[in-house]
Picture (cartoon, rainbow, N blue to C red):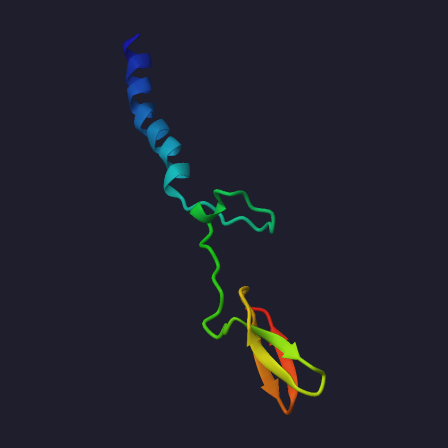
Amino acid sequence: MRKSLRTVLRMAPVAVLAGLVPMLAPAPSPRSPYLSALSDLAVPPTYAKSTCNFKGCGGSRHNEACNPISVPGNCVTYHGFCLVSNC
């Protein structure tokens, strides 16, 4: 019985360390576009680019202009044409 107790006491630290390894290793980031509401705990949230000017195209076809909008959008006029891109 002393031999089996000694063996258990020798193996106990190895078993504890083996159990702690998964907790110390970083979790892999999810590769799916379908994330849960708690996903930002593992993946940092994304924000609009700093070049976002919250403007969209408007006006007539001969007089296009960038007008303020409430959703993120980036509007630029180029040679009389209105160009819109997402933020």
